[in-house]
Image 1 (cartoon, rainbow, N blue to C red):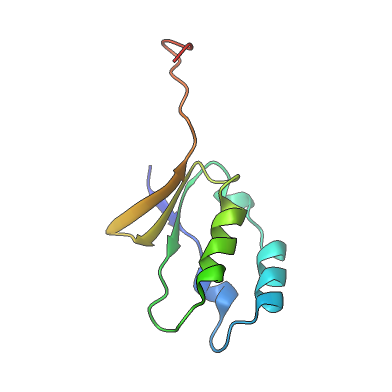
Image 2 (cartoon, one colour):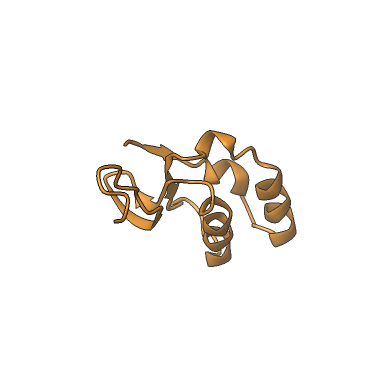
Amino acid sequence: MSLIKFPLDEIVGNGIVRESEFRTKLNTFDLEPYRDAAVLIPWLHKQEVPLWVYMMTVAKLTPIAAVLSFGEPCSPVTLSQRTRINHANPSK
């Protein structure tokens, strides 16, 4: 399963990040393409981004994405992963 990069840089924009503006953009962003997918929340290197930006993004994507990772595409850190169903032995 390949990772789909979440466009956090587009939501954050350039400049100072304001919580109310970010929250509005995140809440109105179409998350349907990320449903049941492996999603990467990228680390933004080019500007200082408050930690709460990442936390809010994780909270929004966790119930939607099958796998949620953070960092770089070459070495992502898995934050959450839904439990897989073993169809050969459903009791596990």
